Length: 398
Ligand code: PLP
Image (tube, rainbow, N blue to C red):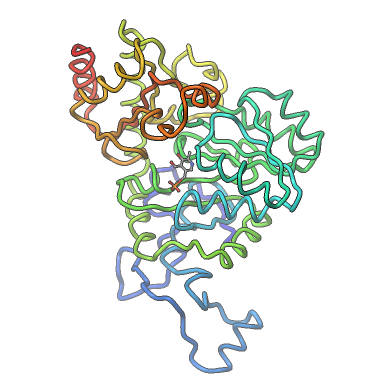
């Protein structure tokens, strides 16, 4: 699916990317049709044989591909500047399929400690069954990375920005150190989106997305994607056809529809998050704000270098007080929904301790680095003034 990147901007690519070039014309439909089928038929045996011998193109069976899904993949290639892409049923399915495809038995994975909980769970509880070891490092500790690479690490995986502390990995510096020893670099760019960060251009081999979030953008569908060089995506696609975590064609259509407004939504979410971060940082009831766009953030310099479009739609902050004060603030907010996830048009708010780590003891949470007064606010596309006014009234009630 190698595709030359044209010179159009990200908004034009989000609307038109992959649409007219990838699909065949059905009833002159302006939009990409939902090809709701489990299998693809052949006209005669000769056509089956031609397919087997590579002279006739067919997806053959829904687990191996679908025309609607293929347009999503082509659009993502254009947005990320990748040669190939495989879309699947969820971000976690992309994570697990990628790790199983690219890490050998008895291999070694390096990841960062501020990491989506389920990704870390898979690396630390399932991968060891295949003899795979996992080294966890600080997102900015390049010396620890160098040691792991020298020790033969097969793959480096990190979000950038990370979730929930929004740490930013210096992707170019990581890629430079990994390239020398053939360590594959995979960056989960979910929080950045291709609008704010071009991880492949920075040197990553593969970019991962929980498409569920900003790409689909409407809190109504789950999907995942991996974009990168063909040599990495090919084995992932092959294993994906075996493991079977395929996206339904209707879900793929919802993703396509959502992606067309990606740039507009991300621009507003960036604006909202930056405004909230600035507002909260000067508020005396807030202890600390984590936002890569703020000079006070430990990775601000890295973020400025590698996040061209903006610093993302998520802000995390610590409320002065403890667990209860943070809950009280959340309960007093009127605009955002209390919910996990992020990246849709609706703003969402959550307390990581309560929504993701309630099963852990305070000591375990402290060890993972989850503070009980932490609030994660994921901006939607509402009016900035409304979100700020809402925060003001909620803070007044503390
Ligand atoms: N990566 C990040 C950064 C996430 O936040 C999540 C989910 O919250 C995932 C991956 C997993 O994606 P999904 O929920 O689509 O399976």
